[in-house]
Length: 286
Figure 1 (cartoon, rainbow, N blue to C red):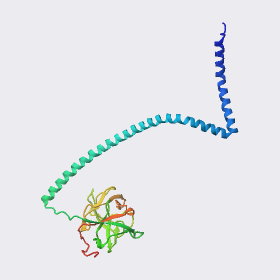
Figure 2 (cartoon, rainbow, N blue to C red):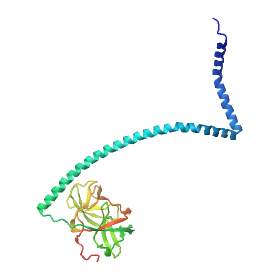
Figure 3 (cartoon, helix red, strand yellow):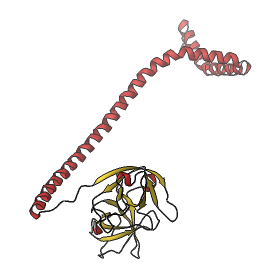
Figure 4 (tube, one colour):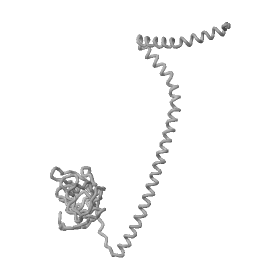
């Protein structure tokens, strides 16, 4: 069989030669660029800078659609997150509406029962807002100094509260400043009530961050997480002021309370006058 001759055979032979020598040619070019880079780095840097400048518009043109696509995907992700958040808020709103309905029903029932019993409501409290100017606490004392005194209406024995709950009591009232005995102080004794079990006790400070519950009147199961509020006994505080939650119950029956108020972060407190003299003399602090 005759081999093809003429121009077509020469072209196919040339194509085969180019394919075979392409790898060697590229390797030689790369080697030449390496030698050139070693011989004249300044020239290579200039060439590289020129290539980057020439390619920058093309890269910018190509990056714009990529950024737009990424923005579209981000928008879809945000929409999905918003939809999930909306569903969660709708469920929470539905749950809160049920609680609101139950609260309104209980409030109306409570008002009706009070009307039938001739219930006399407790006097409304008056408040004095004061700034905490010093912390006189230490190893053997836990107290604060607030910038309000007798000239502002502060009296010894009044309750001091914050947005989270009970802070302590006014131990000493000067004319312009007062000392507040914190719940964790060793001299603090507060009649309290556990909301879930309705157990009454005395919360006693011992200069630790978590006061103890002592002298429970009823022996009942006390569990960590039970809310502790003022009981209203001795007419020192009105009932229901939040104090904290039971933090731990040891094997010997020792109960520690985790206070709602972070005492070391107090900046502003309110001195409350509930109109309750309790066991304190009326002229105390005058």
